[in-house]
Length: 101
Image 1: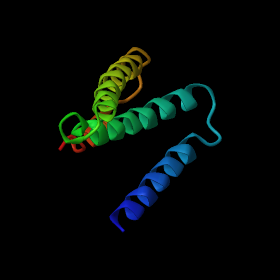
Image 2: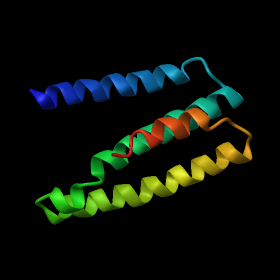
Image 3: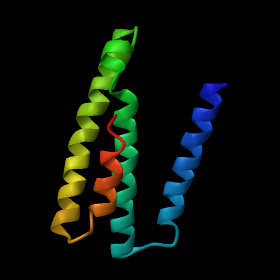
């Protein structure tokens, strides 16, 4: 039952992210895309964070470590672009700090 609820929450989150991009082009698209993708990557990192110790199969352990490594690097790059291009990161930074439990 909990898995179904979690899956629905993830689907709603992804749909919300897509809605944020609808109708946007150029600078508005870039800004919204980076904001949404950083949140999306942070969610993936949060999901994968305990995999190294909690997963049974080595393949899953390795995958979770790879996800954390790759997506952390991508978040760093996207945040740098936000800074370089003068996009406000206050909303993204505040929402991410609350996600790191």
